[in-house]
Length: 395
Image 1 (cartoon, rainbow, N blue to C red):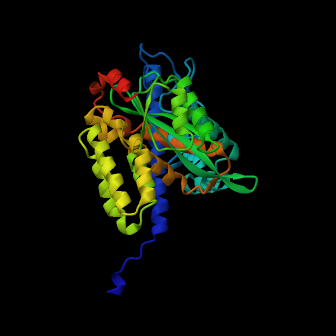
Image 2 (cartoon, one colour; image 1 turned 135 degrees about the vertical axis):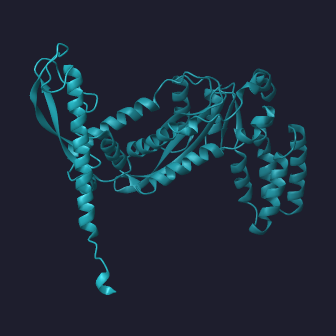
Image 3 (cartoon, rainbow, N blue to C red; image 1 turned 180 degrees about the vertical axis):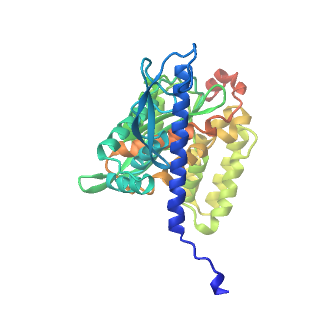
């Protein structure tokens, strides 16, 4: 039986398959180039017809890096007409997917030396540091253009949040904040309308961020949804005095839980959820009073004080259409995007500077914005037809 076992050299098979794929890609591209030349000439090679517009003058070779490896292209030359092909852009030396992979690696924090090793292993050729630098500038330019685009739509609901990443600073590792804003437009679709770097999540950082949104075209939103970050609420009222603010219910719960023993956590959670399960604002306020009284009876004085002082901040959503309540009383939608940024930046550790952190976060958010995330209708905004009355009522 042992004599019948076949010994397979996997490395040799992989090398041969790679050569076959690369050869196939090369032959296919060269065939397409020949067909393109025939179309421009109006006739095939060596064909003599009255419809012929030009003749061949040989070809020149050029290298192209593809995901299948480096291939040699035989680009046709014509005697009269310039050979412009839609298959391969003039002067391009790499396939688009290769360039995108290089940009993605750099933005992910991979060192230039490591990128050189990776490209050599994958495509059989090293990419120079100057090439990576050029691609990096190209990526930064596109991201900056997207970040600073004018906001032409109206956005009744705006969600705000920030995330802290690590950066190197004079030999030390410090925090850098990335501030993010998403919004729901009048058609009911979500958009990422702002991404910016803040030294820290304080009033100065939020005020600068909100002012930039206003300068780009953000009009008075009906409602801002966020956590009670330091200086954020004051900044909202300063930049958008006519707008309302909703404190994220989930963050409010967490703040109360910090003053509750673990053994009482479930009971207190049920009490708090009962407040926001009421059918209207008046019932929720009455339920809140009874919850405060019960918490005091349970000797949870600090938790009772937090509910009594801040409950009204979490009930603003009840003055808006009931169908929107579950989507506008929490910041969960933006929190999920923040987790995606955290997952993507975890492999980096600490960034060399705040700009690199901002670019990676913005690049990831820009990618999300181009997916089905922004194509799904989030809310039925036709229910906001009486919004002016609602805003006057809340004010």
